[in-house]
Image 1 (cartoon, each protein chain N blue to C red):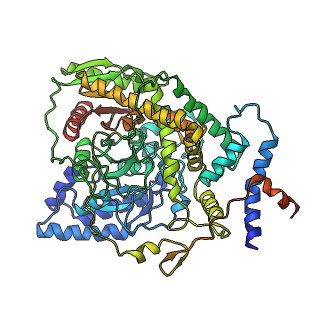
Image 2 (image 1 turned 30 degrees about the vertical axis):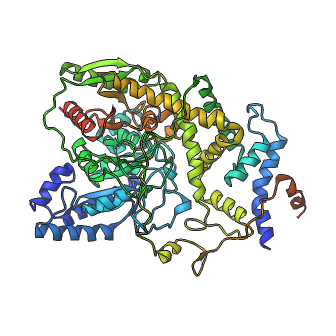
Image 3 (image 1 turned 180 degrees about the vertical axis):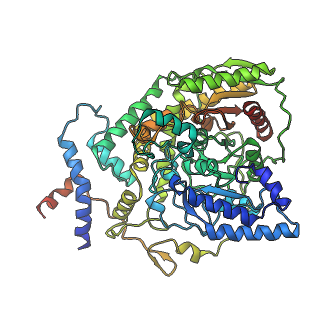
Length: 136
Length: 497
């Protein structure tokens, strides 16, 4: 029952992607392939949701590509403007805490002092694994 | 009373001309009256009245906590406030009540400030219009000014009075509108690429971005860890200086705050610019710059020259790459920072329970809007193994070149840079939404984000009071507190007189 709800929920998510791969949009550069989309969605756990979103990513990449024109030979990357200083490290003493109750209040699913998570180690279904759904 | 400066009202409170409760009630009344601006997400009426009452007790005993005691302030809704909902204008955090105060909020409260409420913003502070939050867009109070209405009436009769309202700019639009509409005397914003200065410019108020490391970020829900800073919005520079004095300083809870001691300071009353060297970066003379902003920029530069300052042209050669660099670094850090929103410990959680991955994916789809998701995906793209060197590291190298541009200019005898904040005045909402968030951010952040990347600069925007719509000047300097505040104060004195 729950598994079906997931499939239904994800079908629309996956369905548009299948639609995407079967169309060739002449305006796009092709940098963002179906493979890249799937990879990004899996890494980010956030979906594109539409062709416009993919097009926006392509525009963003084209925008970023303009950095290639800058000569950065011999230049070190700048990670932080405070790179010349040492970050402050406080001494290793417990000065606050014991606020489990307050912290647990913000979670939706809690059992005693545990946050409840669904089972892990189950990957999201891949695009080609969706075939059986269309027959449901 | 509400139109006075912070210092004036503070004096009035000390002298008993008005009580904190009366002041608080006036502001609450005005907030209700200006509800159509949509500047506030949460109005903390009960909390404010209680704080005002306590302030009143202190004043009666003669134990006021200082210049901020009893002063109504507002806080952008991406700062954690204990017991008060903090949403970042996102479905992801609707109903989230933090169990602690951000350091800057705590500092304000410790000095007796009265918290009127949490202000509206672009979702997760991503945007330059304050139009993309789940609670709707913020309207610029100037849309209702005589000057703007007069201009509009000439154009079209019979159109809906309210259809052509102006945006506030963003992402701290709610804070800027709250200050501009006199509902509070100071507001906190955040500034990553211009999010405090841009709306300050469009709403005709002072927007101050401290140097990175000067003010604590603890409790500010992070966007870009290497660039975020809390910002201050007020109606005059002196007020911003007062607030900055209270907020600056090392915080053991934010190890990126500098440990140098912060000395208290006051702005000079007399303006003497004879020893000042002002730089005008030539690359900021963009073709898209509107003629009104350009002429105001010239006017300001000439004003300084006529008073004895040295005004010279300088160069920041990598200016045109700055916004691109910012775009790559911002989306990359965002991709990382947004990973914490998974529905498990706080925030929105969807109903799917099949697996953690499915739950996370659905929660994040439901909780984030297109803009946030777009930036997360872009950031993840730039951080892919095959792209890391060519995009992320490349952008970090360009960032160093940009920071060096500023260092070189300030090492050559220039004390302060004078630039516009935005390309043009505030545009109508209907005009603004013709382009997507990413395009608009790339356009609107063009002048402001470079200093976020260089980090060491304090910048302030000063309103031009006689313009039909607010116009702004941008003042950047390479040193810590006192000097830029002095300069900003000096500039303000010139501009206002």
